[in-house]
Length: 143
Image (cartoon, rainbow, N blue to C red):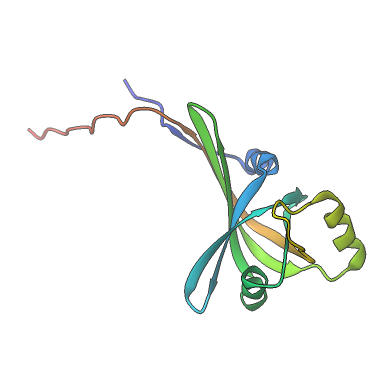
């Protein structure tokens, strides 16, 4: 009897749907060969993510190295999911687009965040997990 895998690879549409449902994710960047991760709240539109930031590390890092990864996840009692996207981050310069995003994306932390960053996603992958007890390892026997 074969046990069903506790990990399911999601289709791109399923991954996008779950990503849209997440209130917060983590931006992963590298600068000067040093990785860094920042929690941010965000919105998804089409195949792009948007987040707001103030002057500082996040803005500097996406300016110096536009290639980023972003991860969000969710879970309930016995299941969970994780979605990772990769793409190019750019600061939104167009005032109308920036104003539109600022109307729908409000900072969680009470700080002024005047920069809107867009991540144009070119890779998305997601997984759904079923939680449970760790199974016993299979023992192979050789004759």
